[in-house]
Image (tube, rainbow over all chains, first blue to last red; front, side, top):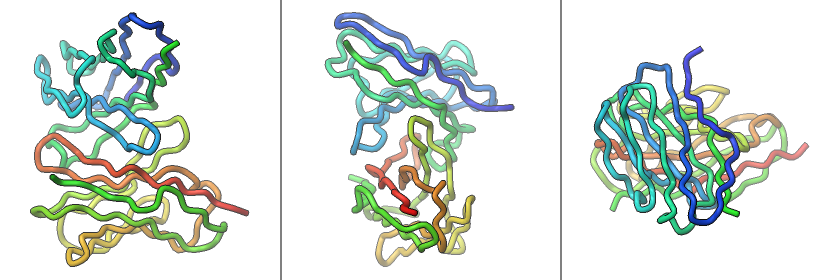
Length: 114
Length: 112
């Protein structure tokens, strides 16, 4: 079955640590996205990638980094520079037509800072 | 700036009753509008979308939405709610680039 997988489902981080969230898709989609979800705030775009080896900052990129070395993979690193990283992180993909396109979402990773 | 507003943070309806979730978008060129649903602890799933044409759009799970340009609205409706419809619902707008603007969401509670 085609879809998007995210791992781990739950992640705990100590202050000052970097952590990497995994996102893999087998939908053959060109575009991939990372969102952060906080209660009552909807989804906010962190980074997006239109094609391999290219990515763009979203609205809240500070303290985050990404890479897109393969079409099917778009990992997100939450660095120690992110002051309030506790949140639910969602990865999505679309066929590459931009925001006119349906986005397909993974099940999410819940990150908690201890 | 373009925006999407969902005025209701949460709504409670009885099972079998009708449902309407409100969504308003800021003015802009032809809007690309979406409704997504999120079950607790899960990702989002597309219910329906509107780009052009017939202003009444049918989606999955018995949902429909009506685009009203004069009111800048794209409200989601369902004639008879089932307990399994309890979830959070997000209205979203495509901006024409790669950025999608999401509303803050409306959480639906269904009572027996």
